[in-house]
Length: 351
Ligand code: DOR
Ligand code: ZN
Image (cartoon, rainbow, N blue to C red; front, side, top):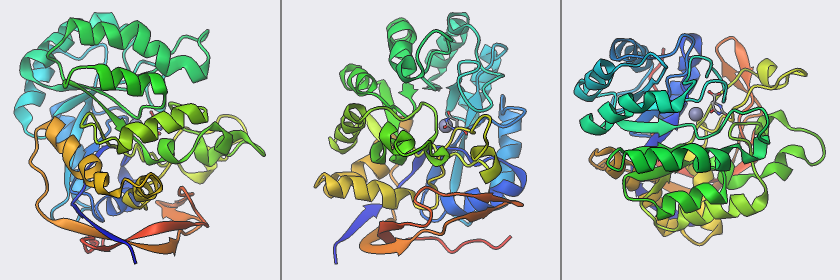
């Protein structure tokens, strides 16, 4: 049987939600990830260090020992330089997440005019706080499939030019243009790549009828973009690293005739799904860099010192998972995943 051992991986982009949903999301994320960067798009959003501390404590209440949530703060039109300084001194809020208002789930509190945030970016640059970006324009006139490329052209280029020392992460990239931009940018600019954008393209979502399970934002693109993402992920370029964007929604919100919620749940099988992609490219030897090293390096954390082992031993994914009092349809639900974590998984904490 094929087998691979990795330093314990981290997930640099995850949605854990809150309250009764934490039981599912934290236990799945904590099976083998060391650190996770927790997205702040709750309602109301996690906009400052005190809110982040309280949220982190709620997460830790469901977590086994050794699991470390680090928190992204939600950037709003009101975010001040003082909040940036507080984040930089907190020790657990390394990044602010920029959601253009209206771009995605719970982004209504997001930024309306990005240029107006430049003084805040200045403070982030000065205090070495990371700017994590949902990179899509929101103009109604721009086709949904072009919104990431348009964001790079009209906004990201400007941000990177104005703030050359600011560490910037273009989250969950979905296009050839994004992969190229990041590959050509300085080492201050990086990108996370999800498992679902590596495994699927828009045909998976649309051919034979719309499949809500694959609807996420930025939306799945055509296969040339998927191939560019796979190429970037397996390339060994240290600017690309693992961020699942695992984003659960209850089944009734996704399988909704009027307005399917955006988000794919992958935390139940994340590293296993990435292993499939790297294996298909004969690049399993580069999975450790992508999953366990480059993200930690960019964030300035040490690599985890323990390991996990994956064996090529297929397992069946349950069709649906318990999610608070709701149901959650996981990616690959009712199907199989080729790789299995056989050591290094943490004992789950009973709640
Ligand atoms: O598909 C997505 N789901 N994209 C996002 O940007 C947000 C996320 C969510 O929170 O559901
Ligand atoms: Zn996200």
